Amino acid sequence: MSADGFASPPPGARADWTIDQDWAGYTEAEHRVWITLYERQAALLPGRACEPFLKGLEALDLHRTGIPDFSRINEELGRLTGWRVVAVPGLVPDEIFFDHLANRRFPAGRFIRKPEQLDYLQEPDVFHDVFGHVPMLTDPVFADFMQAYGEGGRRAMRLGRLKNLARLYWYTVEFGLLDTPQGLRILGAGIVSSHAESRFALEDPSPNRLGFELERVMRTPYRIDDFQQVYFVVPSLEALLDAKRRDFGPIYERLGSAWDIPIDAILPTDRVFTRGTQAYAKEKAAQ
Ligand code: HBI
Ligand code: FE
Image (cartoon, rainbow, N blue to C red; front, top):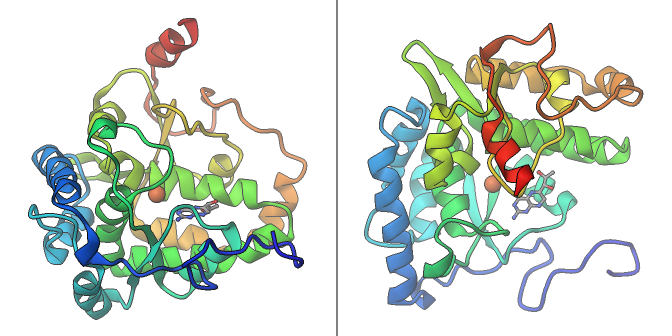
């Protein structure tokens, strides 16, 4: 921490916590980890991931030949929506994260997980950040939503409601589902970058799947250590952007005195897509 209370960037990072990707510095083994992960997901996602994601993946050519070079991604991404990917060492402080998003920069981890951690890791690596998040940034509506989220971040921090805003991000950008005429599809980067959760989120009978409603979501805690117990279904990307365009002031006011909703609860006001058995969570709790 520096004197003004903000964490300082690690040695070698700039004041905004960015670093050079140093693409030439990746080893063959690191590229192979990307290829393994990419091929596993590419085989799984048609018919599971939402169309804007699959379209973005295609447009950016996040190839099977190794970790992509951010400068190459940025040419196409910049042309499509004006977003850019910048490299960071790992998690960055909230205010830095929001500032990047508000300026249409997506901070992505430079490092890639080890071959023995293909399925679980704590900090977002380049596969989660670039494969999981960046394809959606090619969609103009989603691109605007992400910028609006960044713009709202400082206000939420000032009002002491970051916890609530972070739940919106978690249950949409990371773990959201999208309703489509063909059925439910994956929207969130946390799902789409996970081999096991890509199937669990859509197909397992355990979790609840409930209609997205802004205040409801902001009152629902989440788990960071395992599959979600509840997924929220966004009716459309436009609806998501509309939700973010509402004035959060009165909403934060109400949330200040509202109870958190238990993670596995279904309310009479919920639109229920799936009433989950919660078998997975119960089994885990019994272990
Ligand atoms: N930093 N690199 C990185 N990636 C994130 O997703 C991230 C972050 N810092 C803060 C943060 N997310 C969240 O706390 C906010 O969305 C609330
Ligand atoms: Fe993420």
